[in-house]
Length: 354
Ligand SMILES: [Zn+2]
Ligand SMILES: [Zn+2]
Image 1 (cartoon, rainbow, N blue to C red):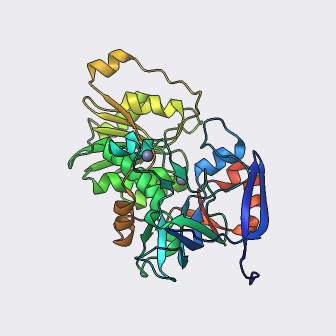
Image 2: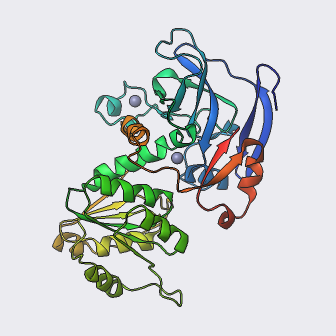
Image 3: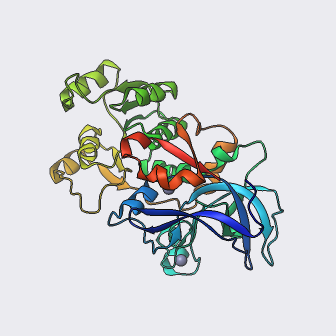
């Protein structure tokens, strides 16, 4: 459908549980900005959190256009922009730090005190067009699909996590959860030199994906009757595959039960990465004595500081598969309806296309 000149369709977040499709004036790029014609924008867990009104989600003031995992074509250049031309494919780092505050100057840009979040604190890409600072745009070679390029931001978040998981070549690594994040982590762990990777995942379809992506051992953490396997049963299965010690365990679910499990199953002197996003009031129990006696490092990972270019390079050079875990595409006009569906029927990674 051809839109009237200078207008665009956009999906607005109007408050918890409220999304609406509107025809609005197309934004104009200001100095140093690009207008991007959106080709693809991933739906992130953060968007679902915001929609549900969960406390602790990104600070969003309605009305706001959400969508922060995106790619598209440069449409027009604002005054003073160089290095881009109309029609060029780009993906965008949605986290626009100021570069001048103490965290930015301390090389910790993800804790910028004046952070602008495209798709959270300023309008994002659940729309036909989006204005972005040119410094946030990364050129994408024409040989790369914009669907794949829209996965750059989630891969960049996983890369920051994998850096913090401190994997060395030859290590054995445990990954809990094989949703999109777990499957990305599996691939990044292997790229980091993990020699054996074990994935725990209750859904058969995801276990198959983990196997296809090269996991050494993929286990259902549940017994046939649906009760959870205990640590001894799991350890016996690890031992049967020749694994005695995980140097890193990576939790990609976001529940306290699996975080505690990651902590218990990690080997001595290992690193436990709690990557899944837990609720702000969730509490997990750990025995400090275990932390001491096994000299564990407990770590986490927050957004994507300085990892976008590496993430895009991995995608461009096809060192990481970002396509096989896509569950489906959602037309922009159907997005409000999609959000209203029950959570179970929209599991997996979906990408919005205008
Ligand atoms: Zn995201
Ligand atoms: Zn800053």
